[in-house]
Image (cartoon, rainbow over all chains, first blue to last red; front, side, top):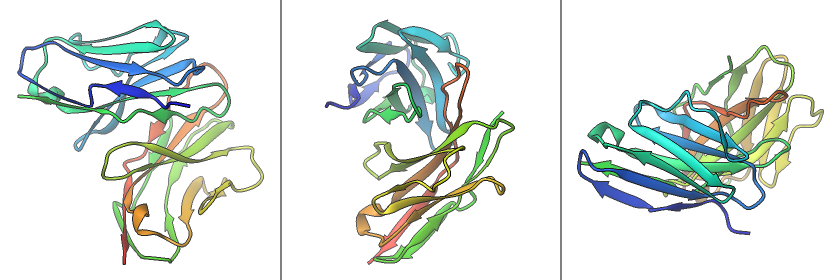
Length: 113
Length: 116
């Protein structure tokens, strides 16, 4: 089975531009998570969905960040406008029922100049 | 609130030897799960092993085992017969089970270096 798929793998953009990160979870998983990882703050949960519904978005840093999950096989994380401090690796992860282990995608390395 | 503490920022081990990575946790909940993840330099996060708080046996997955000591609130990862490919950052995480919350709380990680 395919794992979690993220695109793009690398994104370089200029400050003020809109950035959209994409994620396809593992088929059959009903939880989807967006994380951000930086050296300074480590791994931070931004938002997670259950059955396409956002459950907890308390980690979303500010209104510039938004996330959607229009169906069970696709989610987006959008940053508009982007700022240099948004530079990080963004991970998407999914999990099913049971013990709750999360399976991570390869990440998107975002650089905002 | 849950908290995970990994007190070893970096560890070194000789190839073929065993190594223990420490993890302590804090929670008032009785039902919870503990997880370990590996993050090699390539960046992906790889799920390694899971232990439930009510599991009587310590979890094992190949060369990985979890030394679960509930009274001490510790969930140390033991890697036997270390290999060069084990060099990576290792994260301990926990999740309270029951209820609707599914978040994992992660520790700060331990950077393991396996020496030839």
